Amino acid sequence: MKDEFKIYLKNLVDTKNLAKKIAKIVLPKSLILIRGKLGVGKTTLAKYLINTLSQKKINVPSPSFPIVNTYEFPELKIWHYDLYRLKKKNDIFELDIELALMDCVIIEWPEIVEDLLPEKRIDISIEEDNSCLRFAMVSHVRGKSDHLRLKL
Image (cartoon, rainbow, N blue to C red; front, side, top):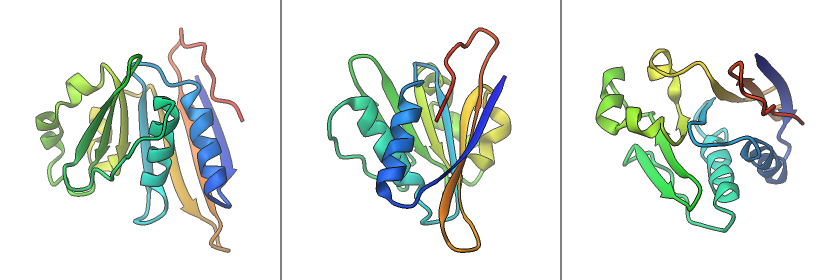
C-alpha cells in the first residue's frame, strides 16, 4: 500500500510542519529517504524531524563528514546518514546499515544504496518548481499489517 502527496514548503514553518506529520508515524524500523539537489533543505528537514522525535531541542549537525550520526532517546534510536560522499554502494555495510535498520534510519542522498534498502519506507523528494518555490513529494510505502498512514 502506498500513500503519496505533494506539499509546498514556502518557508521553514512549512518544513517543520512536514517533519511533525512524518514524526507521527515513525517507529523503530522506520526508514526515511530524503532526496534533492544540494542546498534544497534535506538536512533542515532531517533536523526538524529528529528534534520533533526527541521532544526537545537538540543540536543536529549535518552528517556530511562523519557520514552517520546517531541519536538515542528513551523510546527510539535514530541513525542519520548523509551518503553524498559515499563512493561505492557496498561501503554502506561498513557504516552498520544492517544494525541501523533495526532502529529508525534517515538517509540523505540515498540513491547510491537504494537497491539495497527495504521497500517499506517514507520517500521524500524536495524539489523546486519553475517559480523557484520548493515542494516535497512524499510517498509512504506501507506493509500489509501497517495501519499507520501518513496524512496531511
